[in-house]
Length: 240
Picture 1 (cartoon, rainbow, N blue to C red):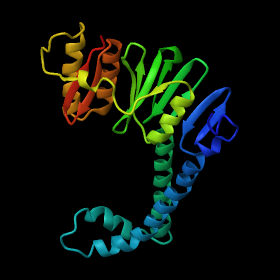
Picture 2: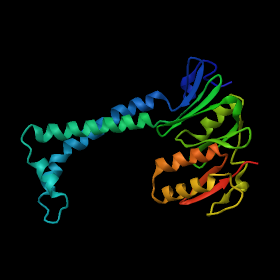
Picture 3: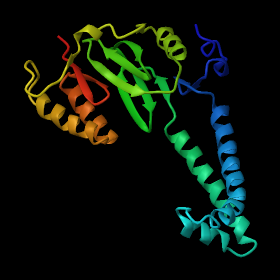
């Protein structure tokens, strides 16, 4: 039984709401970010006028126009405006960090993985186990298909403890790693429609379109095709 289930969620980074156990980084860490990021932004803004005044004296300095604009602001705006802008930028970054935080929720009937601003929800009955592949959490289905593959900043220890505490098998690595093969055009043995999706995903990988890469991965999962990437190469596995 975990510390959270004994009534002390703070020890494990877990919290409970309405019967749901949530594994995440402690809330105080995000509260600290909400204070530190704006403070750092304001501090940088405070130093910006002096930097701008020095920058415009350099004959070779790029972006001289914006620097001249900052240096020409009248008092008190020459100080107030950069400090306010820096604090606001820090708040925005803190908000992004909160929006893209990683957490795993274990409900009565579902397992929900939230990371990078995206959420995957699967039925508990369909989950067979999980493992970490690099920085990605992978949740396997009872048919060995990959139900979830998400980059997360949660530690492997925390994820392992959470999944095993809820009755799921934890693997030290991908138990099906030897079944992956590199995708090349016209590779035989793929489900209908997978070839076109993989070709489109390859173009998205090369174009560094992360959103499209993820959308197409989810489409491939619906066809029971697991895919992982190494640089700009796709490796696939079709569960038997």
